[in-house]
Amino acid sequence: MFSREPIYKNLEEIQIDSIKMIEYFAEQYLRFIPREIKNFPSHGVDHSINIILQLNDFVEDWELRLNNQEMFLLYLGAWLHDIGCLVSRENHSQESVRIIVGNEGVCTSLNAVDREVLINLRYLILSHRASYSIGNVPDTRGAVRLRLICSIFRLIDACEITCTKCPKNVYELIKDSFVNEDGSPDEEAHAFWRAHMNIRSLNFKKPKIEILKNDPKLSEKIVSRLKNEIESIKTVFEQADLPIPVIIEYDQSNDFDALEHESLTAE
Image 1 (tube, rainbow, N blue to C red):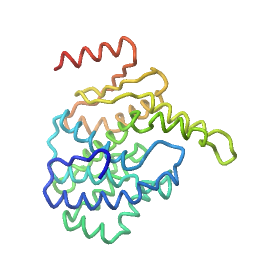
Image 2: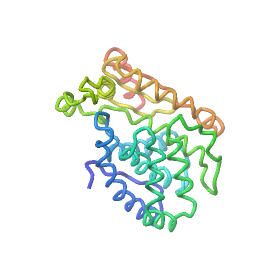
Image 3: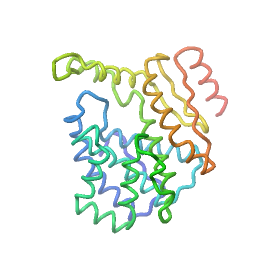
């Protein structure tokens, strides 16, 4: 059991059974990722579950009509895209693929559900960051609009940036251990933690992605990365006739009052 249970939508029973097996497989790796990236925000089970919940919200709010093979692929990606961080932070996508294809039980289970899913999953994992050109992903493979699905996953992974990723009470407890090999403070790690702690919430309201922050400037680097990821998938969304996400940032000032009023009006 997890603190927040993932919710899987629009899947067949055999796909849900397969996802449950993948949950168990992925969790074995995710719990030990801090061994490799100990000073940085969580890429563990909570990251995977948050991606799943955000995927569901995005699909609903953007009114996307995704078939069960496409949803299955997205959910698999949520659990498996970062397991390679246990081996290498820099090359974690390639390592994630290597771990998956090297496990006969996982490959047999996934092939029993969908003979094409391992190839599609490889593309999704390798392309989840803008350093991999989305143009290298096939437009479609069978019933899966693969380039679009990989683009959606890239976006949602980049949206997992709120304060739940870096709890303040945990930071206060462990911040003195953020040091480099030479004993100097790991300022990059401190900056990442503070930037995530600064983001109170992220919500989808087509075509907007609304980000509520405490300090207007503290999270600029993280939000800039999200904007870059959106730019990298812009053409794919346009070709699919989908609205391009627009980042709207609010902070605890009059902007927050405006956001609260807008939400009440919408209701």
